[in-house]
Length: 152
Image (cartoon, rainbow, N blue to C red; front, side, top):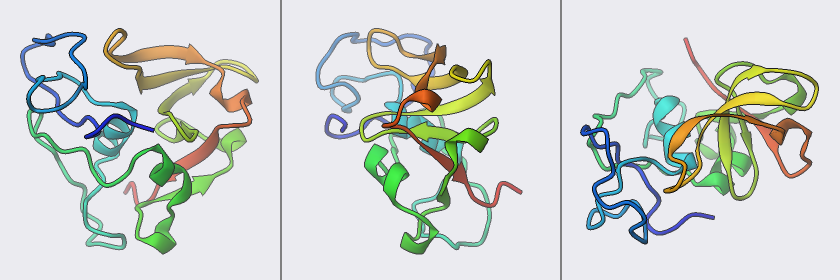
């Protein structure tokens, strides 16, 4: 599901000082970006504290090496009943900032293009980095919808 440990560090120098170093995202290889689940956890400003917490949002400093408690399995299968600040959601009804998740990948919805494609924000690995791409995850049976609780 993810390399160990999962990625969670954004460096502040606009480049990866050791591209293609493996395993990526360890402190020793200085990976410059997140893996997919680390990206969603940070963008959603989730907490390490089980939900319901005090409903504040959490800000993680750019160079802080913190991934959060969820890998893709956790985003897909954990709910508020498990203390997670997100819930499963009908993937046909997701909107901007919701996510589509499989057992091995998660991406954030930017906007729907047509019945099978969406602009997605995602971390695709060392070779591609973090960016936006057109994907057909909504049409793939392996993907489920997920929504962040208590946005505001």
